[in-house]
Length: 283
Image (cartoon, rainbow, N blue to C red; front, side):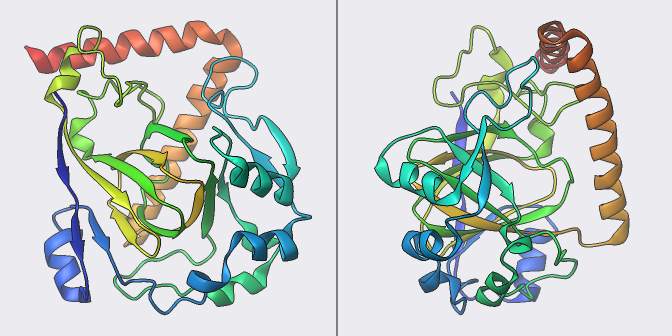
């Protein structure tokens, strides 16, 4: 069985306490009050987005996003933001918008949030928003840029499952990618026996909460309700950012290149490599 521990919830964390208890040991934590002063908490309603930004065109993805072939890692379609938000309001759907820098089209929205001073190294040009319908799922992965991520929930709830980088082999990490394809909701221990040894964390995020996901942490996200969040990223240091850029280049060149060349066969090769690596942990 998966061993999932609750994530600490903390209020009033100081910069020093955060560094000592979470940043240095690379341990996740949920802040209950990091965004308490943000105007976005009240202003960023669905109606506000529809009225003022509904005309924007947005790339929408579904569960097909990671399937091998010509559509690998590409949006399903591009629609108006208003149309997407109406779909989100209508009930369960697997449609999502992710890694969307809405602030390029609407820079005034930057006035509605603040870069926190809880640590150094935040990248001001990289605030991204994530939207998803009730029941939408984000497959288990870690972020390719290797940044520390502060995911701030604005509307709706999310279930977040996290694993430290040292769990990669137990999660059957596909080499040359940042992905794992194990099903955490219905784990198949016959096919993935090492998965039974994986240890991680689990939390339901509420609106107004922020989760700190340390660099390289695996995360699976499920939209308990239709909703959205904004992610702020920190690298802590210039060498950390260089390491992230190198990781991006390496993965995109190899993985996307091989997928274009051999498609589904490349997926099978990665699966076999992941299985061999996981088997080594069982010996």
